[in-house]
Length: 226
Image 1 (cartoon, rainbow, N blue to C red):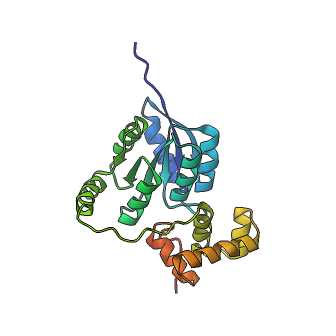
Image 2 (spheres, rainbow, N blue to C red):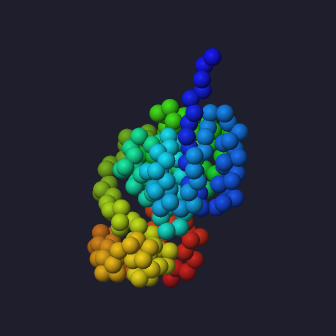
Image 3 (cartoon, helix red, strand yellow):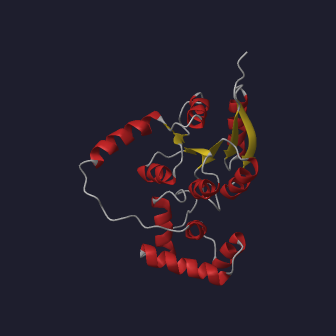
């Protein structure tokens, strides 16, 4: 009798009711085992190192440390782990960054429930998986890129700079940012200086708009942009 190979899964989603729904959905599958749940990107990084799941279902929009930055940190330590991004957005900015990070797939939350187990199995087997609408758009974009001249290289921000950028965009003061990251206020100020220099953006509102446009935070996270 052939034994079914179990796929271990870590769920990372900041809304408890959504995590519960995902767990119930996956526990109905005989080959999928949820080994842990993370309520934030930072917790996902810690749990990934401890549990070493085969697949991580990672929500993009989470406070303090978003799913994309959590993915970047996890991929550095556990490059064999397959990460399936989950988002309510299918914007090019989000999808492009996910691909660049090396995530194994991107699933929009509006996708039918039965697609998630299939997506997990696909990425666990070494394949990539995108929601159908995104896959079609990527095919069109790939064809268009063949005719498009290369633009200037994107700005590279370090992992710590991305963390500071998110906290700044969420309205955290330097003191709060320092406490959250476990670094000094002076170090936070230095990272903010680097952000200003690299992005050529000189105010908090501009940094916030940049964070929203590149998918670091959702528009709903920061409500007062002037």
